[in-house]
Length: 405
Image (cartoon, rainbow, N blue to C red; front, side):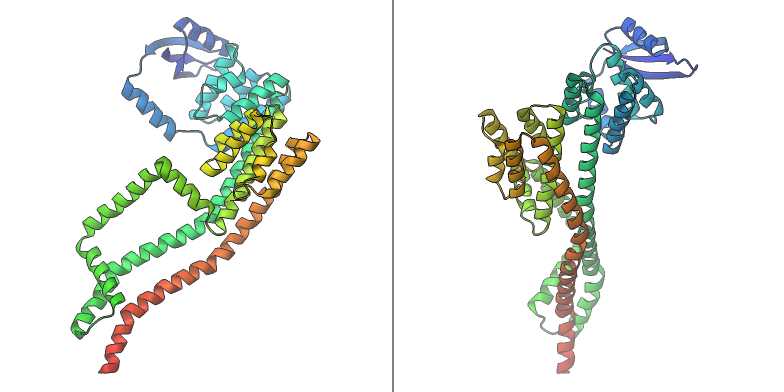
């Protein structure tokens, strides 16, 4: 049951909230354990539309990766220093700014005080905490090293977050240039070409095919701008919906990994992420079969997921996972499989995977620095070709007529 309640803290501050509890009596005891005094509580029931609204609101007011990293780091540091889990959560709650994370930490703390473990409490927020986070916490609880497990979670999430930022940052420059090119091109079709077209009509001469194509496209954009806007909206919406389908996702994944330069960058970034995650899980004591399945959840590309799926099946049959990675050099570099093989032979898989992660993280960092240097001349050639084509198509006919005069 959910209750909307009003209570007073030890400091005398009055506050309100919505919380799940078995009864008003349990809610009273939970708040009392926190040092608060319950003033009023009213059971609330959510209609279908309210639930839908809360889901949307939850999405809009989600918890960022940076906040989750900070949460794991702080909880690790405080539990390592000797604070109880409940006490550490209370400190984090007080230090957190009002928002979704503060409410979540408060909810987790209530569950802890009821006798649940941290991993069980985290399962109540599947849209916030990944399976990786939950299983790492569970492994830490079982081994008695929760603070170390949380520290590893924070490190893994931080490395992955920084890696994603580097790759996305490298893609921003070409994306901005291409977008500006398209906008400038549309503006020229709307405002520049009509003026030149009027000149051609006065000259009354036969125009080349490319010139007629440009003029026809310009006339369409100017004369049917509403239809053009509807077409663009329809094309964007249709593409978005298509990419949501299985066929669309597979096509997108296929094209992405085969892009020149970018495909290799994504392959190495994915290898680093998979190696880092597997290493963290194995270090925490999670069984290798389960570690592979959890790692599979963090991979977005269908083809990379398939390799991990095959590796999971191989482990269940008692086979070595290195052989599966060695068979798929298009998706995972041979170095990954070789290092896994060394790890299997020496019984030190987690350290080998950590070495793989560090190697590719550094390599991706260097590649992203050089990517703009590689892409810039290519973009300049494309821009030059587009400008040259436009100039030849629109200006050459004028010079041709002038030569004939």
